Image 1 (cartoon, rainbow, N blue to C red):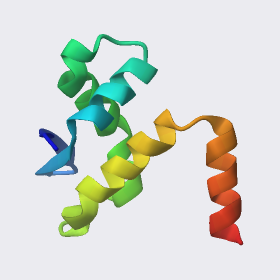
Image 2: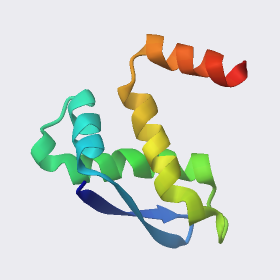
Image 3: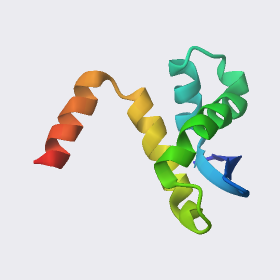
Image 4: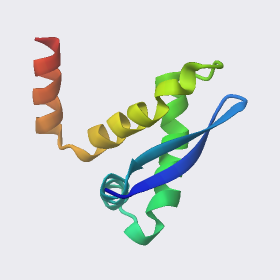
Length: 91
């Protein structure tokens, strides 16, 4: 599967994250934008949210791609699916 690479700033660090092209396109569509601009829209959206999820201290960005994918999936999933997942995780 094709990947899109995006550069995100975490504090003073710049890190590169990778995500599947289809996931980035679906997020962009969910946000109401043209998927032709998917990389830009997703990068800006992630830049606003990812530092809060992974932190900005040196070394915290090691799992940024995974955290970015989690954020995108949560944004794409409908509320019913998200609630069912949360219920399953909580037990």
